[in-house]
Amino acid sequence: MATARLTGGLTPEEQAITHPFLAVVVSLHRELDARMRQVSGYSMVDYQLLLALVNAPADGLPMGSVAELLVITPSHLSRAASRLEADNAIVREPDPTNKRLVRVRLTPTGRHLLEVAAPAYAALVRDLLLTPLSAEQGSQLAGISATLLQHMADEASCAPNQSRGPSPVIRSTDGQQKEA
Image (cartoon, rainbow, N blue to C red; front, side, top):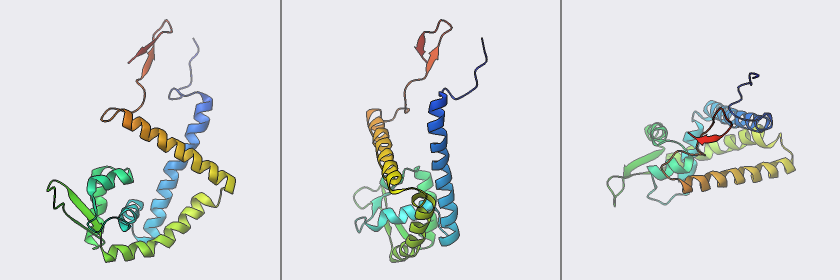
């Protein structure tokens, strides 16, 4: 039996799709974060938190909801909130109707920080993501992204509190598939 190259279980065609895509996702986030820190002193998560709160109700949003919205862990959000709270950009306070919840809201200082950082963010996104693409490629990327996000949302709603994705399949020596 010939030794197969380890491919993570993907065919060469699947690798040709997934490897560049995942590399772009990771590299784009890393580069946006580094450049945002350089021009504004704040991370991408900090900026996204301010952005999430700018149109929130006056009493803010529950921290858990913000973590879900930003697709980050509660502990990651808590670290970002601590940085921004130290700069008086946000306020965290107990929810008046449910003392187990903490709400976060934007302060006037936070609104000002967002207004200052927004042009830099827009320029970075244009430079790194939009300018290299034609209008057609931009539309395709938007459509593909929407499809993938919807698929992931559908998957998450089908199996709450369970691991994502299909069950691993193991092939026995006789070629039969078995769930792991």
